[in-house]
Image (cartoon, rainbow, N blue to C red; front, side):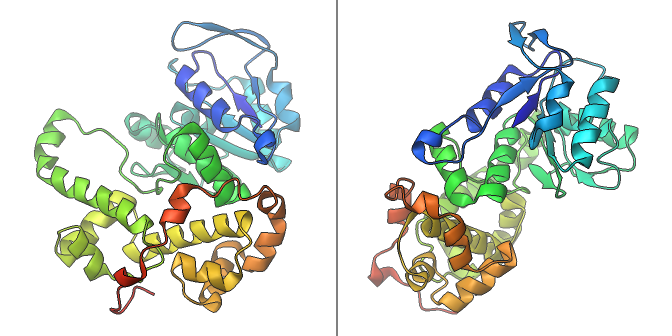
Amino acid sequence: MLAYAPCGVSAFGLSAVSNIFADRSHLGLPRFDFAVCADQAGTLSTDLGMCMRVEHGPEAMANADLIIVLPTDRRPLSLPAPLNKALTDAFHRGALIAAYCAGSFLLAETGLLDGLHATTNRHLSNHLAQRHPAITVETDSLYVDEGQVVTGAGAAAGIDMCLYLLRREHGAAVSNAVAREGMVTPRRESGQAHYVPSPSEAETLSYADDEDTRLADLLVWARTRLRQPMTVNELAKQALMSSRTFARRFRVATGTTPYAWLTDQRLDLAEELLATSTLSIQEIAEQVGFHSNSVLRTQFAKRHGISPIAYRKANAPLASKHNIYRSQEVVERQPPSDNSIHAKTLE
């Protein structure tokens, strides 16, 4: 894995990415060979004025499977010709290219985002759309997946993007384990609100603060009760909202519907249990709230194109680590049997 650090690179961004892709093979996690390249090997200045020694130039991109373009505070945002060519060549040989914040703007200079959807720092969105009209800029997404190219929004959204890449390429068990090691939220949905409103916006939106708090509490509550059937009306009641208000606020907060969100949470937990436990497929289906292995197989095929058994075989090395990644959170997701809900479910 290679991070491209332009002059004036964000020290926070460099630290965050290097931490997520640190070598944790001693814990049974996939081994990542993390390296940094710059416009040229030598001394590089960060946005904090600190200097760091970089051993690689653009030539390092020739062998990288994943390249992440980091943000910078330097303006104007331009990409040197050798870097442009190195990124383009890496893409055409099949490397996965990711960028976030101002890094998305730099990646756009290569033309690799033309005709695609992308996101960047909210304050750069209009500039990006004007300079590159062939790109559909999504201002309210934490990250946008276009297959071989993935872009993220500003600052902390880079962490969300990197965890998403881990989840996409290596499964939920790996991304959750890395998130726990780094003490960050394992998953924020791509459409989840991610910016701090201006004072005028804050005054307009202040009435929703209590609803946001209750909705955040609901998401935690629901994650610990995935085994239970849950309806939209029951979730709305738990959040102390009307069903209509709840549906609207839920989409604003998560970028998706309650049904889709619950399905994703259940599949994430199923992936983790498949990779880290010896429970049967039926037992896992019951634990995550699908209640039958046929429903689990169907949902799994939609996400991965393979069966739960095939996924378990592919992730067998994790299961052999004596359930090292099964956290207390997973255990607590099994609610008392007398709390089950019998109304018509979202499924």
